[in-house]
Length: 206
Image (tube, rainbow, N blue to C red; front, side):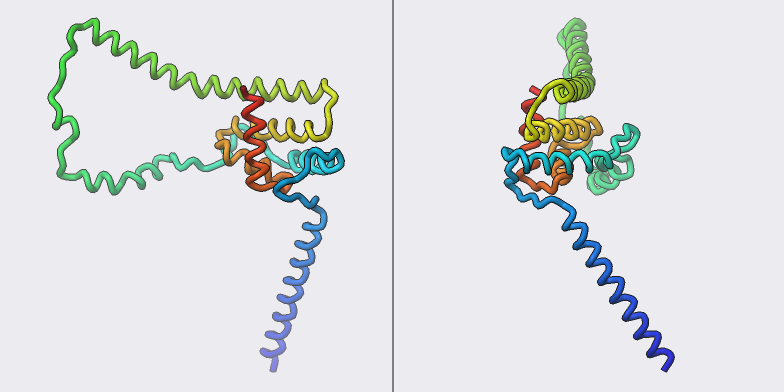
């Protein structure tokens, strides 16, 4: 008899927890602004609602430079796991260099030119990420200065603030697709809003 009472007690407790969880979830939904895929940002009142929600959620976002925003899958164990099957298949086979005869350079000068060309190419590859980071930082400062010194509608403010957060995520090595989706979710947007953010960001970075 005691076991039956215990079972009934546990059932009632679980049902109460589930009911409280559902009520809390419904309450959270009620606190959020209703935003569909084609939210009318041309309406000042609607834009102000989205702008306020955007600012509130942005304050909770952590832009710690020492933290990674996404897992790139490029760690040594991951690369080794991905190439493991290729290494197994390569056992007992010839190296690709054995299928080609060595080619000597025409003269020493040609070799030096080729070496210089390769060095320049490597340098360009190293400079591209640096230039991209600098461009992102300069664009963010320019937009922030524009927000601080220019009178504009709530609609434009929503767009520019969205681009600022989008650019900050790009600075933390997030992809454009992922960064736009993260910013879109701040004000309950979906793929449509993410595409708009990418388009706004592209125009600001040009």
